Amino acid sequence: MTLRVGIIGCGLMGQQHARGYLAASELAHVVTCCDDRLEAAQQAAALFNNGVQVTTDWEEVIANPDIDAVSICTPHYLHRPQVIAATQAGKHVLLEKPMALNLAEARSMVAAAEAAGITYMIAQNQRYLPEHWRIKELLNEGSIGRVFAARIDGNQMLSAIYPPGHWLFRKVKSGGGVIRTTAIHKLDLMRYLLGEIKRVNAVHRISGLNPEMDCEDVAAMTLEFENGAIGDAFFTFASPRAPIPTASHELTVLYGEQGMIHNVGGWFMTHGREVTNLGLPDADFNATFLNEVRHFLECVRDGREPLSSGRNNLGTMAVIEAMYQSAEQGCAVEVAV
Image (cartoon, rainbow, N blue to C red; front, side):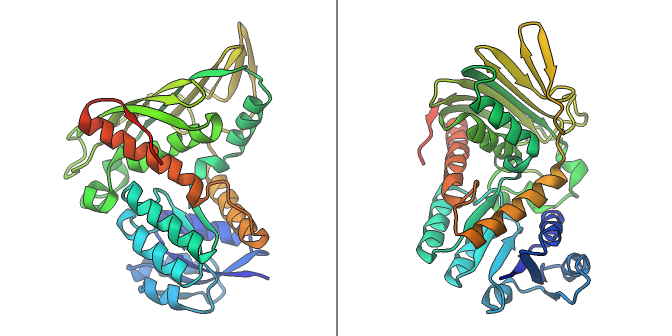
């Protein structure tokens, strides 16, 4: 059976989800595109060229009995009410990250999804990069031995991407700045690659370089993993230039007892003086959206738990929560799911 889908939120991410459904047309077809800006819904619907309906009312989409699943790609503060409504209506849900404004909201959303018995997946798209799949395989094979340390880094300039007054600049709507919106990508990836994070220490600031932003746009963090590894992380929304020589301007370095894996100038594995170019693609993020949508649809079809299920993503949300608690308290904080 072909799944009937509604897309709620047709901005940048909503359109990426739409392309994912187009590429998996044997598994699903989009019935409705919804956005509070009618023109955005129309733009997304136009990608399909098959009479997709448009609306500005997300509740109408969820109430529609002809829709089996929804992609929710709206501002963060709308995630909880929309997911709860969707689960109560028996819809499967693919939700853009971050799951919620805080961990308590996230827990309630997972509980609602499990009570309804629907498939609930968070679009942590870095888990769906083909190069990250290969890195995971190499680590599982012991190619660099036990990983004892990791470094991650990301640089963006938020005001160069979004106009003044955008909801991402407001904590009440975003739930936080660079930690919740961008660092969450790599923190989730570290959980996928290395396992659970048990303790964090974080500091963050507002640089003043993003006009009207009232939440953090620069943050530094340290990580302690349950397997004994340690890590450090730096993320900013206030970098007018991209100083990291990677395709995505995001650094990933994994230090093992027998070698290293890093993405500077491509993906490389080193053993002493020997350097191997892994020949992997680098940051084809368009592929991640295609892969994650297909994975969601296959999980619905097969009745299996997604790689980035709501239940699994509680671990990432708990790390984010601990980051903010650490910055507020000025000390290391244990991660509690």
